[in-house]
Amino acid sequence: MISTVTTTVTTVATLAMGATLGALAAMLLIALLSAKEVLAADRRRALAFLGRSLDVAIVPLLMVFALIVALKIIEVLA
Amino acid sequence: MKAFTLCLAAIAAAEVVTSFADPACGLLFHSAILVSLIALSALGHGANPSPNPFLSLSLAPLIRILSLSMPLAHFPRYAWYLVASVPVLAAVLTLMRVQNMGLADVGLTLRRPLIQAGVALTGAPFGVVEYSILRPEPLAPGLSGAGLALLAVALVLSTGFVEELAFRGVIQRSAVEALGERAGLLGVAAVFASLHVGWLNPLDVAFVFAIGLFFGFVVLKTGSIVGVSISHGITNVVLFLAMPILSQSL
Image 1 (cartoon, rainbow over the protein chains, first blue to last red):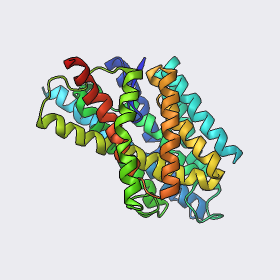
Image 2 (image 1 turned 90 degrees about the vertical axis):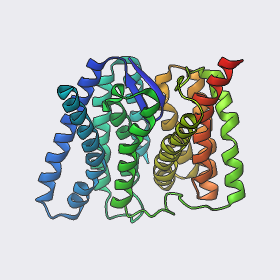
Image 3 (image 1 turned 30 degrees about the vertical axis):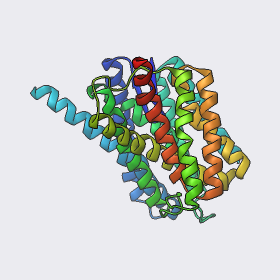
Image 4 (image 1 turned 135 degrees about the vertical axis):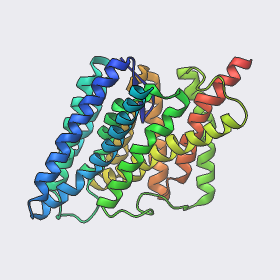
């Protein structure tokens, strides 16, 4: 189960579930990055806007992904 | 308007799935809503120069996706707020850039300072009432003095400012333009309240809905999120820091 602390802070009960959710978010990030790459090849105005709009999700998900990778590296090295 | 209302209902449903069924299913549900909202924003692009309501609303599922996937368990509990708020703030700033929204557009302006100061003061009673509903454990039992003061500032900035910037500054502005004042206010307050379902306390959800309406009304009438940001931050300081310590010492 999850526990909500505030609107923006929700945590899951176990580290294993946290890893699953992190993996799902990484898959979403890969899908969004792929879509952005495909949309960049099209010059239509609406699709260009869609490509830019994807940044709204891509930028923060990249930050979360970087944090997950950094923590994993620290865990391996420690 | 129908599509926007449907999206609001879908976000609330995804939050219920996340809290009561399975967080992984909830994350997939939120992801599907996020992608749909971004796709819908492109469909209406060009017809209306104002900020796109679907793109703004995409912040709501994104906030939950980020908070669920963030490895917060590796950090001490008192650091969760700051860690969680950084990517959310990045999302809001990216959205403002994509939609050419300035600081004044999202309410980052000090209009009617006396009213803002009065609204800021409402944070203390709100915090006491919410504490009587939730009775949370002390956030940082080992901290005292300067550490507590720093944590209080971090709470005001990360929960008060970032959450109000997202919900009242960006989402409400677009929702009011898309749905009108009354429906926009109610819709955003409902989404805000639905993101508190995880406490598994219906009274708290109702309380947060009422607070969301109040904050939304203030921002609608003053055009500034300064007062409600401070009030929201103080509410959380009283709820998670002051009241638990006070109740333990009594």
